[in-house]
Image 1: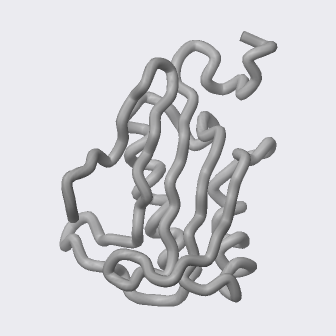
Image 2 (image 1 turned 60 degrees about the horizontal axis):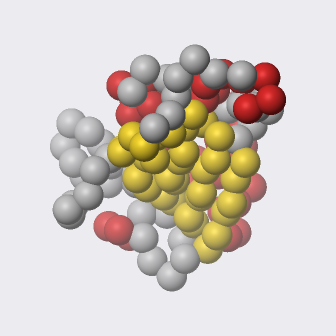
Amino acid sequence: MGPYSQAVRAGDLLFVSGQIPLDPATGRLVGGDIAAQTHRVLQSLDAIVRAAGATLDDVVKTTVYLADMNDFAAMNRVYATWFADPAPARAAVQVARLPKDAQVEIEAIVKLGACAAERSEAKC
């Protein structure tokens, strides 16, 4: 959709660009409610993180962009099924509009390397 990378590694961090609910087979926005769109976004995020040799347990920070903050509770229910405790740090904001008029977009920062699963530099 533009001149950007899905993810960029900088040292032991992976910065994953915002993912919207696109069907990877068609490149089209998936239909459905905020729960269906959130699930598709997290499937994409999971695939990108795994391709880098990490898991969602290695995600240290996410930013969730919502077209409507009234969808927060429904998005959060789906989001909670994808991340184990301790969950990543997170910000959630309402925006005026998302690409392709998606209802949700999520970006992430992932800790890579030997200490990835620790989430605490003090333990590394």
